Length: 447
Image 1 (cartoon, helix red, strand yellow):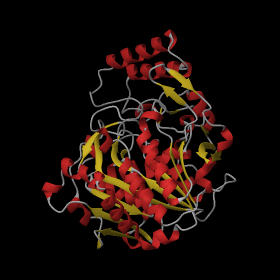
Image 2 (cartoon, helix red, strand yellow; image 1 turned 90 degrees about the vertical axis):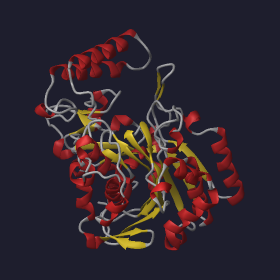
Image 3 (cartoon, one colour; image 1 turned 30 degrees about the vertical axis):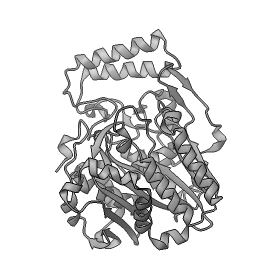
């Protein structure tokens, strides 16, 4: 799927002493535009940059949510300054056009995510380079947190390709023939079951991806409630335009075949049932929605679960989310515009990762700064996430996403890891690792 005998990852450290690996020091890197461009050009390399000329480039940042708290801009999403610097480096290589877009969570305010100052910088680059640059919100469904209003069909379905992986889906082995177990928060389970059932696994992919020659994935390296960490692999979830196509977990505890929480718990089971009742009715604030929502909260409180145990598959036993992520990566590399999979890659996919300041703790939506102090560039998303998880001191065997990523990168002879231009091994990388605060439910996955 994502393996490549010429796979590489180049990691550049932005610190030389432990004293420099601090949030106040590293956060200043984002403010030096010219130095950022030099770092990015250096790590991309002349071979890659020369391949960009005349090509259609698709850039996928992590724009998961608008800023809501102080100091979030350095750890919540791909930093705007990092993105602008990368875009400048790409434009210098003379592509024919550049599309930049993402599908944030439905409650994200696009106007707060990308302000007038950001668009002005994009307009300045358009004027300077005379190369078309499009900024796109890929979401078909949005939710206004203040008015509690759901807005559907923000873009016509003709802007997307409904891609059915069928039995080739990573979800197929855990799909129940008789029960609709897949769930995604705040969406109608019936809609999800229409798209994911035995032999059918459909995704709603923005067509811009299939029209691109080169894809540059630009994740923010963070912890994640459902996968432990989010990097190059998880970031491609944003090419899907509607969450009703994205299974995040399975209904029920592990004792009854689900992965929402460990074991079994009657009150948690009832809380899940209430969620199923509430979310299909969520078109506006009404008493029906409030009733089922608060009843679900009450059952959760009665469950006497541990403080770090959460619903919605937010724990290390989640066996669904990584499968959905791998499906999307398969489509991104091998998917054709006619909705079929090719035996050979259809486009070049690279990842340029913003790990200058990463995110730790309750990620991906409520992280706190992690002074990771690196940027990375790779042609293998699986290799990237194995390396990033190593730098975050995760036990790679305990994360579904990294344990299965190892199966894609094969053995050490199939890839090369460069750290500051020196070839190293994966075990060598531990010397540059940093302790990370994992999300609740993932404490047992840290070395």
